[in-house]
Length: 160
Image (cartoon, rainbow, N blue to C red):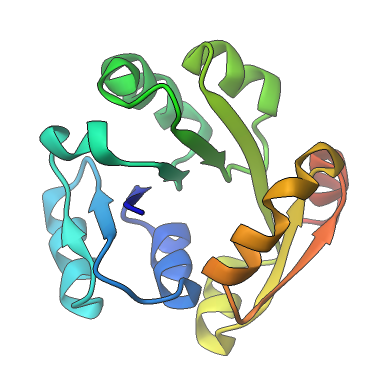
């Protein structure tokens, strides 16, 4: 099942560090230089282009809140209707992302803590909303070194 990490900063780097390695992971970002830098660090990850988007089943949005709208509005119609957008920006709410993606699934997956610490330790804590418990097994499988707790976006915002 193909997945896409969008972004090429600290959060994307951390995510790729703790994500189960396979040949189905793609990376897409606005800055070609930082994308190439990450691809050099993660040889199992492939560079994505818009032609890949229709095949992607899971999209991990590792963008700052102000980067969401530009990416989603430009690309949302290229994704299959069964795609899931995992949104990770701590200070951005699920409802805001849902308004942008329309009828596609949005799952808030928030990092409690700092991305660089998690990358260094290769372990940390994700918080998943109560209403997305059915995604828990999939997320645990994809991120085997991460702890996953059920909680709210507000809890993570307060903790961070």
